[in-house]
Amino acid sequence: MKRLWAPWRITYIREIEKIEGCIFCTKPAENQDDKTYILYRGDYTFILLNIFPYNTGHLMVAPYRHIANLEDLTPEEQRELLHLTTISVQALKRAFQPEGFNLGINLGRAAGAGFDQHLHMHIVPRWTGDTNFMPVIGDTKVIPEGLEETYKRLKPIIHELLQS
Image (cartoon, rainbow, N blue to C red; front, side):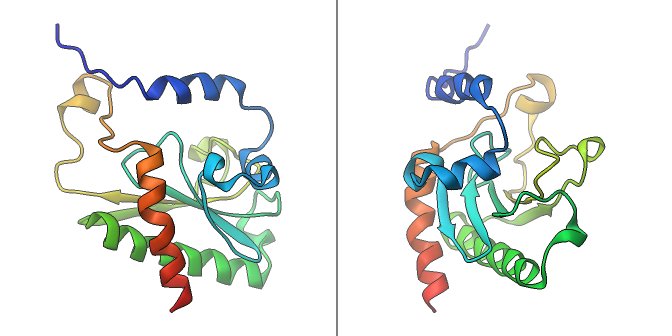
């Protein structure tokens, strides 16, 4: 039997057991962006790393307001959500050179939303062949870079893009 060692994952496995409430409300309120992986705070929305990523660089953009429905976004929130999604795509292109992206909002539990009461956009970079035998047969996803490194790589790029 072959073993895949990923000891850094234990922190996140333990953390998921402790999650209470809405992460999109609690994380910004902590005001510890390096700890909560918030990459950028806009006026109405913010960008953060997904701590249980589908791929390296899996980002999310969420409004500060605790709302579940797309139609409940104000025009300002809509504009900023799309703007920060676009900035996220640009930053990921610069940092990781992905060959494609999955962008999506899961509205409701039936659609796959883990936090179905707080709308959020997923930005997932993709590469040809990133779905291989590991997730298909082994039910294991290999994430080649730790969250701290991804955070340190993306934060300055995002801030630079927003300055231009």
